Amino acid sequence: MEWNKPLPQPTPLSQPYWDGLRQRRVRLQRCGDCEHWIFFPRAHCPSCGSHKLAWHDVSGEGTLYTWTAARVPTLPEFGDEMPQLLAVVELDEGPRMNTTLVGVQPEGLQTGLRVRPVFDERPGSVTLLRYTSADSTHPSVIEAGQRPEAGPVANEPAAPARRIDVKDLAGLQGLVSEAFSGWSSEVEVTQELIDRFAELSGDDYWIHTDPVKARAQSPFGTTIAHGALVQVLASRMRIPMDWEIVGYTNMVNYGSDRLRFPAPVTSGSRIHARSRVKAVQQVKSGVQLTLEIHTHIVGHDRPSVINDLVVLYM
Ligand SMILES: [Zn+2]
Image: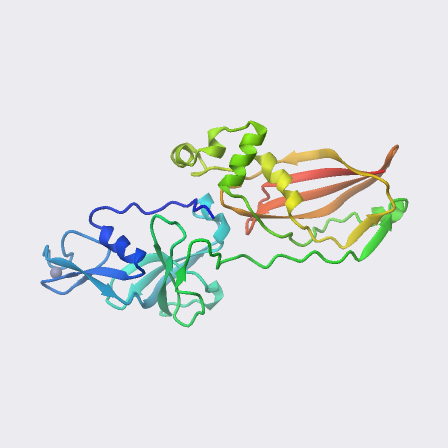
């Protein structure tokens, strides 16, 4: 899995802290004169001004000082981990640090909660220090390639409950509904997938394919998938439907009555879809069924693709 989120840039002063995290150790500076513990890394003691600072290993454990649940991503790249549990942890040595919580539900949080470190190794170049509650079963290391924060379990496609013959127009029209289906299985939109689509389509515009330039210049802060790619990925998802049409000899994709891309899908996002039958119409060559498909980034209210797909049954 490609890490598409902003990362810390170690400086000569902070490098020992980041090196410690890579070894799954939490390290803090302490003043050799007044014994004050220090975070963030500095050149002098904020308590007495001394320059006699040294690095020491600490447990990394502490208590939850304050927290909030961000239900709108703080940056588009964080759309796959909603809500973001932004927190300040007070270490047992005294210093407070900004972090994010994993493996906990926002409803179960309260200030003063005992917390322990979680080393997130997924970014590769650096290890991030995150936190979970002391009594959580969450592993203390998130290894690259692991996905411990998988979203809600995808709905298994329900066995078709209703079989409707294509000649039963009234029965087909009974499928028309304002209500959407349950969510489909999820698909991850990786940079590799975007690159392959760019090659296939010939649309290799940098907002899709150049993560470095996109980070610097794109309003989204990272690369985004082609709308057309997100549209066709609906074919990879199993949207649960409680009906099945039978008795036809041929079924073709007749195109779209409406196709919109209201929100971008940033590289690395997980997406899923749901649908409803919008219209059923008898036409000369058969029956036309319009399926309104909405594809969303998991956890986002706003759809990334709205597709009124017309299927012709002959
Ligand atoms: Zn000091």
